[in-house]
Image (cartoon, rainbow, N blue to C red; front, side, top):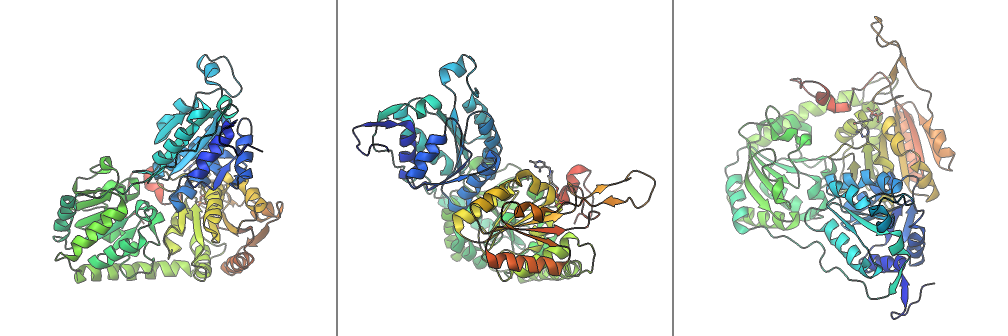
Length: 563
Ligand SMILES: Cc1ncc(Cn2c(C)c(CCOP(=O)(O)OP(=O)(O)O)sc2=O)c(N)n1
């Protein structure tokens, strides 16, 4: 046991845990080994919850999701070189998603690395990390550990959040230094109040709108400004479009939701308010034909160089989302902005037609199941479990679940995000269960599941309330087509006999096999009732679905009538 006296010297490991716990860190996700095992043990001895994964990439995704869900940096702990590199995918993805995450990794002795004298797991990790992170730091003496941890925390959560790398060489962790009180970071993510003139400019533009549209991004969900965002949307009376992880900021059944009329509102909106949403590929870069060439943009964002990235922003509002939304709401209340009933009627007509068409697909009598009927069964069960957090990845699975599974509360959907990364599913599910205590339902394409599937053992080991539903259509995107290139008009499609339900049984979890919507519903109801680790092997017709889901337009020239 470490000395509690402040005058005596302690190991670097203890100084790291002092600094982390002094700044509110209570959970670490990771894969330990030389030289970080003692760091994890010291953390556990001090009451920090450490969760050991099967692969650092999943541990990193869990840390990133923890950062998004809590607003505090998620911590991932890895060993040098290969462990560090496995975690780097998740750290880079956290930076792209703007999730606050710190990857702490052991590393080799700098003197040996710099002379390339061949240390154990030798790699210049800071240089490797820097291009993929918001910040990357190395601590070269135990006396500076508190400074390094403090800098990493502030860098991860201040301004636009992101991934931060903190390099702790083995000889620093094992060295001793006099124990001094670690720095407690004051106001690590300060509010950034928008300039009044920027708010006035935005309101003046909104007053001219005949067909306004509010787009809510995951930056708005991350801000935890749920009430004021809802007030703003309702005060304008404008239709809103949530990006996938912003679903639930206002419930998907809210009358102003335009999700079921997405094509119409993108093509016809004349003034668009982007709130924590980037005009990137997920919004077709704001360009025609998906958007009107005449559309004018207001953008609320915390990162100035995001403005004008794809379309000119006539009213940029720079600030943290909570402060900017509050300022805009106050100004709107003093303005002449009023709902535009004819615009809302157009949207309602489009919603009715699209919902009717979707409803026919959801209740089709198809065997084997397709994505829609399986998801309708899941939707109907989740309607009685609105506290459940939905995680999703895959291609057709991801896209169809986004459109079919409604979300009624903020930060209750986690998915492949800005980069469309496969492999996030089980790490996100573990973090969601650990950080929120809510039940978690992970809706996974079978190939996507395979990227982190071994974490099923981690879920069982920690007895987490996670239900994994594997959409089993026998391959990447769809089943393997046998003789697909012969002149046979209907290629015989081979359905793998994979039984994912038996996988979880190997680790003590509950496996279900479902081939009909009724079986899917019964399995999910049972799994949610037991609140134990479960996996539903959901058999999907291998012949349905499209290459890359809805991304097919990225694989070939855009077609006119895209779904
Ligand atoms: C790390 C990584 N590797 C590969 C891909 C490419 N990819 C891959 C491999 C996907 C899996 C699709 O197979 P699935 O069975 O999960 O999907 P369905 O939902 O269509 O069945 S979706 C997609 O974009 C990716 N996005 N991320």
